[in-house]
Amino acid sequence: MVDLIARNATRLESVVRFTDVLLLYVMGVIADALFFSSGSGVMSATHTAVLYFCCTLAVVVFPQFALYSSWRGRSLILMAGNALLAIMVVLIAGAVFGFMIRQLGELSVTWLLTWFALALCGFLVYRWALYGVLSGLRQRGINSKRVIIVGYGSTGRELHQRARAQRWTGYDVVAAYVGDSSVVSDGSIALDAPVEALPALDDIPAAVERHQAHEVWITLPLAETLQLRRLQALLGNTLVDIRWVPDVTAVSILTHRTVEFLGMPVVELNYPASTGTPGILKDIFDRVFAAMVVIMLSPLFIAIALAIRIDSPGPILFRQPRLGLNGQRFKVLKFRSMRIHQEAGQVTQATRDDPRITTIGRFLRRTSLDELPQFINVLMGDMSVVGPRPHALPHNDLYKNKLAMYMQRHRVKPGITGWAQINGHRGETDTDEKMAHRVQFDLYYIQHWSFWMDLKIIVWTAVKGWTSHNAY
Image (cartoon, rainbow, N blue to C red; front, side, top):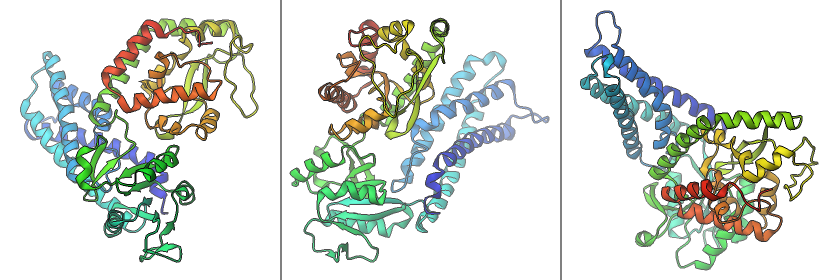
C-alpha cells in the first residue's frame, strides 16, 4: 500500500492530464454560455474551432510548464504561477488561431478573458484539492520517498527535523552518513524514528540499494572538498535525485540550479543545463523538427523499406531496448541493416566487414540512413534530435562500473546525433579509451548545452556527419 501510488504514477498522471484538458474545455463552454451562447446553446463556429484548438494544444503545452512534475516540498505558489503561464500561452495561441480563421465569424475577446479567469480558478481549486489529498496520504505513510542524508551536522539535522515535522511532503529519512557524529547510538541515530547511521562514505551506494532510496541529500560543508570529490565518484552511476543543501552564504558563488526546498535554499547538483524554460524550447523544437523530417523524407522512408524487404528476409525495422531519460527503457527504432541472427545473452557491436551486415545495410550504416526511424522516437518523446547516443543495455552494464559518471549520460534524452559524434567519436567503441572519450564529450554537452549548440550540431551533422570512416 505504501508504494501503490508510485507503482501507478503513470496511470495517475494520465488521469490528471485528461482532467486538465477536460477542465479547460468545460470552462470554455461555460464562458461562452454565460455571455454569448444563443438560446439553442450552440457555440459559434469560431469559438468552437478555437476551443478544440486550445484543448489539443494544451496536451503539448501543459507538460512543458512542469504541471505534472513532483511538487512535494516546493512552493505551491510557484505551481500556481506555472499554471497561469501555461493557460495564458494556450489561450494566446488560441487568439492567434482565431484571428487566422476570422472568416468563420468574430472572435470575442471577452469570451477569451472570461475563459482564462474561469480556467485559472478551476485549475487552482482542482490542483490544491489534489495536492491536499496527496499530502494527507503522505502523512499516513503512503507514497513516501526514502531519503539518505549525507552529512549530519547542523544543516543535516535541521533538514531532517523539517522533513519529520512536515510529514505532508512525504519524505522518509532512512539512513544518514554521520561520520564521527555524537548523535549515533547502537548503530542508529538517536531520534524517535529508526534511521541507520552510515559510518563511512563508501557505505552510501550499498545503502541506496538496500533501502531502495529515491533521493540523496548532501549537507556536507564546502570545506569538506575531499569528501565531496569522493562522493561524486560514489554517486556517479546512481540514478537517484541528488540535492545539495549548502551554506546559505555560499549560494551566490555557485552556478548550479538553486531552488527553495522545505523552506531552505537547495542546490540541485545533477540537473542538466537543458531544464526549465530552455528545455521547453528544446522539446518543442525537437517535435517540430522531427515532424518536418518524417513528412519531407517519407518517400525516402518508403524506398528504403522496399529495398530492405527485397534485399533479405526479416522485418523492416529493428527494435532494441535502450535507456532513455533517467534510465527509463524504450525501444529504439532503426532500419534493419543485418541479417536475422541470435546472440546468446550479449550484444556484439558491428565491426568492419561484418558478415552479418546486408548489402543494403552496409550502405545504410555508412550513410547513417539506418538512423532515420529514430525521428519517430523523437515524436514519441523518447529521444531528442541532439543528445548522447543510446547504447545497448549490456554496454551500459559493462561501462558503468569502469567509467566514472558514465550513467549521468542518461540524465537527458538520448539523441540521434550528438556532440561526441560530430567530434569523430562515432561507430564501434572497441576499447575503454574510445568509450571514455565519447562519454567525456557527452558530459560536456550536458553541462554546456544551449539551443545554439544544438543548431550547430544539427548543421554540422547535415553537412559532414552522415558519412564517416568509423561508420560500418
